[in-house]
Image (tube, rainbow, N blue to C red):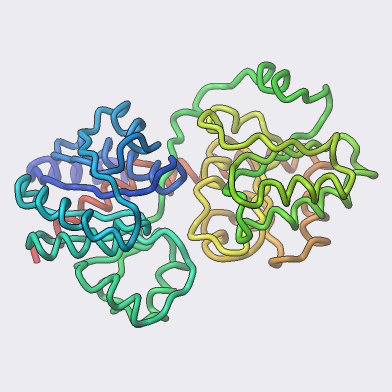
Length: 378
């Protein structure tokens, strides 16, 4: 769509002010909650009235307040926290929003939909994961919602497989803040903090340290590279219950001087342009927001061809995708990029351009506005 058409549509949207209540119950500022902040801020910029319901002292709480998004704190302990549904129903009845948008799986979707039904407020829900569930559970989870927003075609297909009516499914991909990478970044501070020697190739991975993120395969691949590519360094960002197990694996593979575990960092976005390669060996992934950020920063991505990753990474153009669990193929893909700086630069530039065109916050927000209006207009 040409730019003047987008501007015309945006001006038209501003004529109709909506009052939207967002519900996000995640504790940490992972990719999903970050998308809620992007969306809420963009909707407010368009003149809409937005409030975020979230747990007190959560990552999304502080991020939303920093973005000047009004916040109402309600504690939620998960899907079985019925008092949360009661408190949310009361708040909906008093605040009277036009629409409720539920976001996370940690109680927000199941209990948020229940509260919206009790308060008789139209509701939509975002689905960000591609894992399967029982059809009965899916039917109960999504019954209260007029629309289910899938962040990738892969997730939309999972919903269809669980007998969710295709007419209720809308695909709106996650966004990335491309503007933060518009100016060059001085990486001297980053390399000094992590002790990266001159000439080293930095491979980074970011995600929860849980089985489906596939870190164990990445460590095996790096172990196979260390003799022929002693210049490679791997930094793993993220926290999770596999932390000790992955550290033990790295030690057993003799990777003590090659791999660093950096834990969860809220300044990861700032470091993105300082990576040479971004590795994302996830076995299941809704879309892979971290890979979008890497591409926006001009970093080529290597990962498994699983879930929504093929929608985030164009194989052979913005990165390399290989068969899931294939350590040898993952190792070869990383080696190819280590050996070819021109290819890294070419893929990085292609990824940055694609993010600017297809995954901008403006594009994501405009699609949500159109969806909200379609719901409210029947």
